[in-house]
Amino acid sequence: MSSIDGGKDLPRPAAAPARPGAPRHEVIATAQRAWLTYLGGMALAFLPFVAFINDAHWLNILALTYLMGGLAASWNIIGGFGGQFSLGHGVFFAIGAYSTAIFVTRWGVSPWLTMIPIAIFAACVAMLISWPTFRLRGPFFAIATLAFNEVAFVLANHAESLTGGPRGLSIPFKAGLANMIFRDRWAYALLMFAFVALVIALCVWLRRSRLGYYLLAVREDEDAARAAGINVLGVKLKGMALSAGLTAIGGTLFTMYLRYIDPPTLFTLPEVGVKFALLSLIGGIGTIWGPLLGAALIVPFENWLRSAYADSLPGLSLAILGLLMVLAALFMKRGVMGVIDDLLKRRRGKGAS
Amino acid sequence: MTANASAPMLEVRNASKQFGGLRAVDGVSLAVRPGEIVSIIGPNGAGKTTLFNLLTGQLVPTEGEVRYLGEAINALPPHERARRGMGRTFQIAKPLIALNALENVMIGAFLHDANLNVARDRAYAVLERVGMVHLAARRAGELTLSERRRLEVARALALEPKIVLLDEVMAGLNQAEVGIEIDLLRSLHAQGLTFLIIEHNLKVVRAFSERVIVLDRGKLIAEGTADQILNSAAVIEAYLGAGHVGSERAAASDEVRA
Image (cartoon, rainbow over the protein chains, first blue to last red):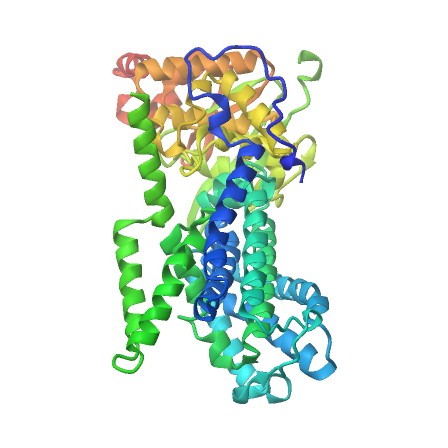
């Protein structure tokens, strides 16, 4: 990660520009500035944890928000930066969840040990199923990934010896750091915070790396990317592998938090595959902070809707989420991050004039 | 440059491309030598862009051979050709609109070095070469047509190419912009770059081409210097129709030159 070494400015050709443009340091952020922004953002995201450290109800919501923020940010790597609108990330999430549960319940292996190998396995599966799928573009790709999710749903229901089928798998409560099972809610919230912090750090690094730029180029125009010497399929596969691996880690954490998983929990589209995309869209697709912002807005709101109206109006939260998505698509195409960006630009523009 | 002038850099041997019943390119042979500027002209539908796509790898020829640096590359994918020093632009400019001008050029500059700072500095140097440094922070989607075209040239130059293939970079530009573009190409050529250019506008071709190749209905119908081509009956016929040859030939030739 040579890009973290601060904004070291190599000497450039001396020729002065004919007309003055924007100062060079503003054209792309220096590494120093990118990582300071990261620290600032994560500190802000940590504040509610400090505020609610003794409130079990809010710690639960926080843990889910951090987890969904991390999962949406993982999806955003291929869905946002790479522009490949996958709706099949439930498959990688489920690989993380089931594999962890199987290792814990059958052989008592610590989830800490299996987490990374499972993520690598999920990355390999992702590359295998993406290789043919990446020949499809736009909505056709999205539909194909949707099909993978549904196929995996059916398989998980049928493979009873492995997944427990519709009965699901439950993990006995044996508290201990080594087992990734905790008595206190705050420990889970902290764990989920570490996850989202890791994913977003990877995004900050990616956005300043060649792979990150190549993903953006592929999203913007595949032919132009090829003309720039980019192996489009290779870049998509790398982005998908990274995204799927992180999603599987999220699956591990989810399993260890709930200690019970079954096919509907892992494959229901509005709760998993579509949710990752939706949170990113609302927060700001293709941005570093959008997915976490989307989770911070939607997860607590949804939780409240569910607890307040679950009995009187079941399905209300889904209807409202759908409405929000339509409104976001109509009025803020770049999500909340886009609105914030525009406001900042307007203020800067006023300050300059 | 002259020492190596006899060995073609980019070559097409008897290439054809069939689309169903249409033979878009029909038995075309041509060669571009290091340091040359070669133009391909022809009326709409002459097969210029199809030939271009055979050269850049977007299409594979039905018959014949594309050779680059002495090697047959018929099936080599476009990105591999770019890596071997073949830069190109598109007839419809394809800037990466969400990125700023600097980042657009960095996409090309990353080819030779994965380091962000190195790519950024190379991209600045290229923007200086094409006179666009003052637009570095501008989003590509906010650039004018002529700036977008020049940005594509810059992205291609960032690959440090041996040859640059330009697909109608002058189309839709006004007189002043065309003048700027021609000056830019001349200065790049003076620095040793080789060009193969598709151009619809004969005036433009005349201003800077050493050698002109004329395509009509997929076939190569003439090859020579710009002046030879502009006086060729076959070319005027292809552009303006058979009726113009003869009595109206002088007038047609004037129109083409105007």
